[in-house]
Image 1 (spheres, rainbow, N blue to C red):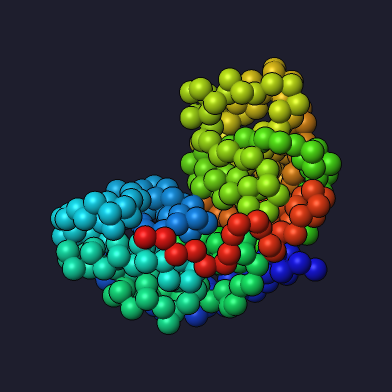
Image 2 (cartoon, rainbow, N blue to C red):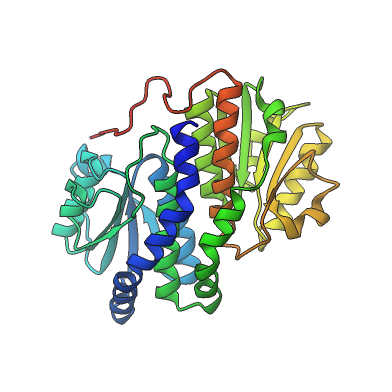
Length: 346
């Protein structure tokens, strides 16, 4: 068993522990934040953690009413810009907490008056030292270069925070069921997609709304572990130019959740089918019947837990597919070429 597979399978247990251990901390923080909501929130992260930051944008803007954006670290590290951080929330997300540019963003934001929070796996790290509040990911040691359980843990922790802050009863109810559904996701068999992608040179990975950050993460992992040129697009953005590349047998992997984005994504699937492309659909079981005639390859998931949770469940299943695909392409998913576990950028 590769480290990538092992750590993917460890994620539900880590998240189960995380949700229990962090509940008091995040409840209190959410309660405090509701008394004095920030004017805006900014995330600082790179790589997979950057996708988690984008996921938080969708969560906070749809369920918290807080405008959320992503920091461009070079604005601070290279251009030395000074910004007004008053009444803002700065959220750093990291596995290691060691990247100098992310640390500098938090440092500048804190000095400027922002409330700083670090969602980090290594709680004894430079990033954690710069945060007013440290939220542990409880993922344990991660050996594979490609992050899996730390990404899953990041998303689960951000969902927990948003559920407490929004006090949305549906988000809160789904939170209690999340570990069980993640275990079920590990039993989903996506191996049918492997033969279709073993010889592929390019692929589009498409999602929308809560599913778009997951599409970006999946594309990153396909590049990282399978040397497959994968590009992620929103279901809307792909129609503004990139679709010109779609041709017969061109693979497109869709991540779908049961919400307002579904209809527009199905329209993209239909258009791809008209080009005789290879459409691969990852979707909750309760959507399979309505889409059976559209997707060339269907990748099943458990029944929809909640539109905001479904992408997390999907990426849990996807990681096992990515690991199998890498091996089918003659690669070791634990040792991507030119990469190492901790990347320090400035």
